Image (tube, rainbow, N blue to C red; front, side, top):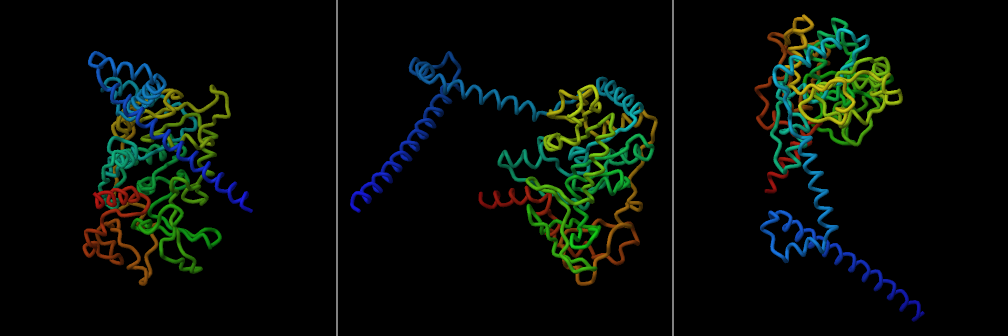
Length: 406
């Protein structure tokens, strides 16, 4: 027994010694990296003999730090916004117009960049949500109820009406494609819609369109909105697909429509998307076909995208500016957004009396004379109007928490 006890103590002591050695080694490596990093920051002419000897002694560390610096520089270049000059922009838009005219089945993929003109921040732009959080900065609140479809949204709706666009695949949750008047059958909102909640207990799934952001109580893997289905009593849930989740709802995601459109596409136009998420959806790119049989790809974005090398044309410009020029080239008038014709007012399901206090987000103000049954926006507090939680406010919440701690 004594021998077994001694053996057990010996094994534990050996394991502890091994762990301690690993910790000391990591600390030594960190010190070496810091030392070499400080030397490398100095101009070569200003380095002392001792510092030059340090670089010679730790060549592997020098190479690794140089590789890291190269990766940082590449990443920085990819995040920079590039603008085509006016003449180049017009030339490229003419090429895009020719492609649109000749396309038999044009599909449009849209990202956050088409909504920035509606004062909805994007994610990876210079002032995007993820960019600011990575820099340790706070993210300001945005009143999404005041957002309206942009010129790009209205152009897309018109091009679909003119049968030049067959389908729109959107990553945006802001509901602006729906509010522009774009047909729901021609649209796939892959990441959900902030104005739609559903009852998955009903078969088929029952949908409720609201005039406010239904996601204020929801987050990753927590989708209950707190309201209940008036038919079966089941809890309603939002339609948002967060990072790390897989969207399974038929509507408004409409994956079937997106996959079928991509299969038939001969031209794909990407507007305002970094494509860092979309590139992972293999069914949207026909990569199983030979290169010469894939849809021709046209990209409008100010930053680098992982599909740039595969594009027939990359236009470095703002979406609204590019689409305005495109509509001029096509000779099609751009319709103005008219709040009185916003489909969301006819689609919306009125709240029951007991549901009136079930949300704090500001409603979309209806046209004059049509808001008799809706809560008075003036009664809402300033705090309730800021975005805290939900599909967009998640990053904002992190910023608020960090700010408080500081």
